[in-house]
Image 1 (spheres, rainbow, N blue to C red):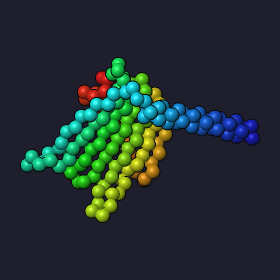
Image 2 (image 1 turned 45 degrees about the vertical axis):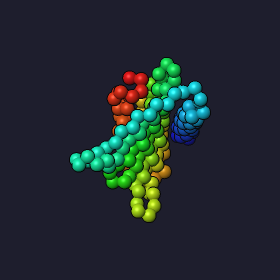
Image 3 (image 1 turned 30 degrees about the vertical axis):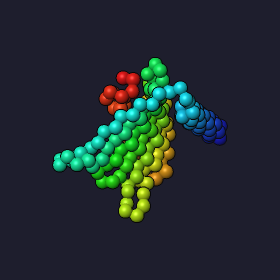
Image 4 (image 1 turned 30 degrees about the horizontal axis):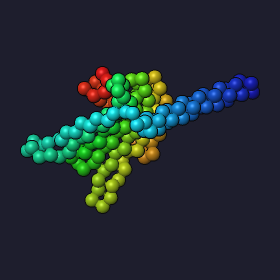
Length: 158
């Protein structure tokens, strides 16, 4: 019985170390992208209007690609009619989503309140770790679909 326990314990430690190594590799990859000076950034901006034609929000999309149009990062900044803002950073490696940072703020009259502050790590299309710095019910699969929608809808390399 002790032997089975120790084998399970060792197996658990090995899996944990492997996950931490993968997270560290993703973090290094993201930092490497931010340090590169050979990438091109393009910006797409548009406003959101209400039924009366008044601007009530807007979105800015920043896309980072190389000379061969390989996608490395998409950042979106969205101002919503309720004065909240949402920022998403999507990082891609070989056309696969590897990292997402999500920040959402609610703009109160006296302060800027963070609603969501999360980081999501993906490997081969599967979530391997989610870090929520604020309690949230953020759905990692919906975030992945949102990242894919930016590449399918005319942005990115698709």
